[in-house]
Length: 212
Image 1 (spheres, rainbow, N blue to C red):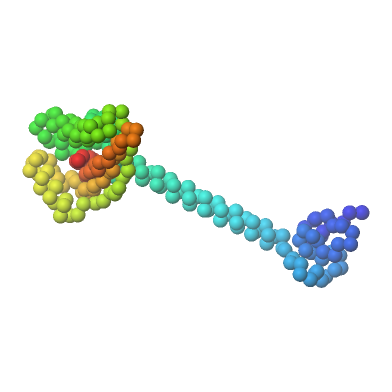
Image 2: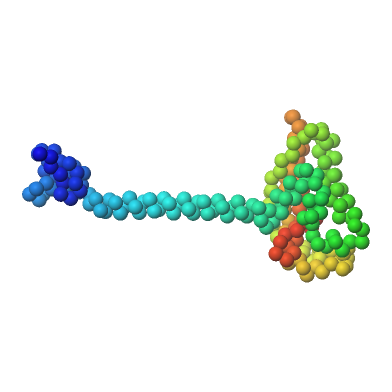
């Protein structure tokens, strides 16, 4: 007749003095086998649940961090740099104009802002084509993004006030700069240029101030 452990229910073999599953003495064997560690099945279950909980927490934290990084890459200064460089690669002047600061709406000429960005991007394209040819591939890497010092901001505000007297510079709460390394490559030829993107925080969003 089969015997079972009264503690965990595991099947026992004839002659067993302790349960091989949980270490509980069989029948009247109150002692334990020397060197045999008795494991409380309840504690074992609790430990397993605790480990699973820790693993789940680590996964949740990792996903949260990844989600934050992805979110930040599409918002703020990072998001604006991404949009500017996409328009830059496609020579999409209309998108650059749409991303630009409100100060450009205060210029007398309607064509000024279009011409400004055409020249800003065009000079790099001319250089790339003369250096590596016309069928090049563009890649870019953001070297750094930093906030301008108060002194540098004041210099820009003075320049804006002189060039766009009707624009209220107080609408700009912060100015940041991104230095972007752009590489044009065709075959074995390649050339690098650093594009300077100056951004202004106007209201709750960031806008393109200068592209150099």
